[in-house]
Structure formats: C-alpha cells, structure tokens
Length: 260
Image 1 (cartoon, rainbow, N blue to C red):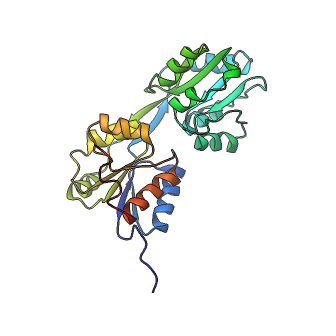
Image 2: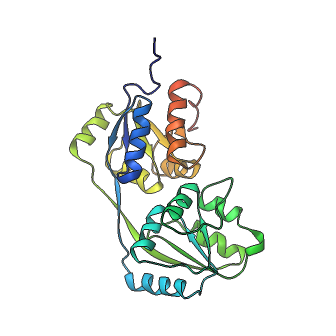
Image 3: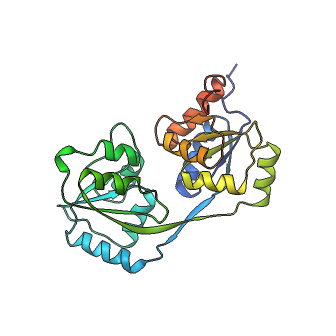
C-alpha cells in the first residue's frame, strides 16, 4: 500500500506568482498539497528614476567597490537597464536564491553569507579584509535600513538607491472566503511585505490556519504585523519553507510552542 503524502488534502496559500510561485506550487503538489496561488505584492518602477539612472551610471563607470543585491527583483532591474558591472566592482548577494538569480542573469557573485542568508547575516559575515570603499545598495523603496546602517557602522561608504517600489495586490473575494472559512490550511509568508498584506487583507485568521515563514527575520516581521507564527524555515529558500511545512505535518506537536 502506498503511504499517503504528508500534505495530502492541504490547501496552501502561495502569496507570490511568476516562476517562484509556480515552482513552489509544483513542490507542494509533490507532497500532496493543493496550492492556491494568490499574489499579494507586486513591484513597480522607482519613484525617482533619475536618481536610479545616475547611480547605475556611476556603477558602470567603476565608481563603486561593491554592489549588494538583496532580491531577484533587483536583478530584474539591472537586466532591464542593461547594466554592465565592471570587473573591479565586487558583487554581494544576500543569499543563495539571489545569488542564483544573478548567475542566471549572467552576473558573477563574489560573496554570499554562508550561515545566515539575511541582511543581518550579510553584515555579520562581511569579509573583514574588505571594509573599505563605496558600496551601492539598490533595494525596494520600503526596505528596512538594516543593511545600510550595518555596513555603514562597519566603516563602508554606503549609498542606498530605490530600485523599485513594493506595492500591495488585493486578493480576490474567493480567497477572502476560503481563508475566513478555514478552507486554507496554511499560508506561506515570504517577506515582511507579504506578512503585512496578510494582516491587512486577511486577518483575523482562523485559529487552525498555519502560518509558515521563510526564515527567522520574516517570522519576526510577521509577529510584528500581528500574525501568529507556527512554522519557521531553517533556511531562507522556497525548498526549506515547504520542507518545514512538511516536517510540521509529520510531527505537528514539535513546534507547538514556536510562537511563545
């Protein structure tokens, strides 16, 4: 007799679309879940395109010693602007997922934090032999100042520029209904922005609805938004997030005190 898949019958809300959402949906299906893709954030052009253009021009002229990339969306911006990064400018990625996006786009990756794939981890693990020079950080308009302030405190000359805007996307009425009724068994939380949209659009969540966060930092942001967190992925990756949900399904009492 074939054993039942650990997420058989679970309806799981996936709050991002595109390739990421499709990939997560496929992984969830492999464990028996029914993915419900409902993008809750989207990205728009920067409010100050002239400032962004000026920073990217400086970058291409070799004025920066480092550029720090914190998301695949920033990689998309670089590609859309046809940015060529000089060999002398080192490229740091906040994590393996962002590093993979850079590599896929044809950019090299010189540094990725090994232990903690987050802004805090990047600062903590920054190569102590490279605490000098100018650093460009193109991020979302609502990015937290953790990275900028952390690298500045290390002694680097840091310049932030808004590369894009993060905007909320209203979910369809049937998503509201399915969440409120408890038909959605779990909700994946992939960023602080997503957490805030979930709290704004879907809270209060039914007590039985599991909230699974992609890492400790996102869990912190989710709690700050008023959500109860039940599952936290060990690593900041889609695979780790789904695996954490599977682990919870296989051993539901192991993380019952996760949010205390």
